[in-house]
Image (cartoon, rainbow over all chains, first blue to last red; front, top):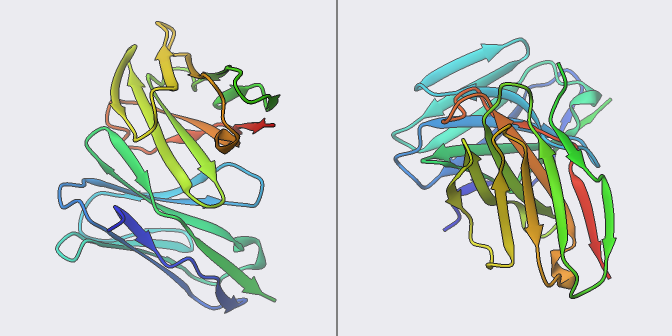
Length: 109
Length: 114
């Protein structure tokens, strides 16, 4: 079992819709959770981090964490074509930040 | 405020050679992590340094090594290069020891082994 799992996609949504990206992790001791966005040919860019169960909102982005289910999600409201990228879920346990393989998001105008 | 700086941006090496990559973290950041990114394997953790000490190491052979200097700059070295070492090598820095505010990545060094 991979430490951090994501659906590779591609996930296609129309412009203006809500995109929902999901991630599960195996280490119950994980304490910090991050979402990164990576455009083709670029390095990952931090979008959000979350530590506590529940929702955390930042603009059009909402991160959701459920530690009991070992599940993290990212919602993107009012999706724009510029949101088209690979979204990486990262989980920190101990001194290691482990990344999922990423979900490709395509927003169609 | 300058971001994470990685040098060089591109490298072409021959099998069997060795290579050293450099990373300068954001000013004030003391934690530096290294990752290898390939299309097939995604982002794979290499190692993390904090205050010149390696705190964790990923599942890579001993040919991959690193160090951190007192000014928090870090280098990683790959000896006896293999074709499979061709990848984008990314460095990331964070403010504290636990990276609670996340890690900021540099632009990476693209290594091609021929």
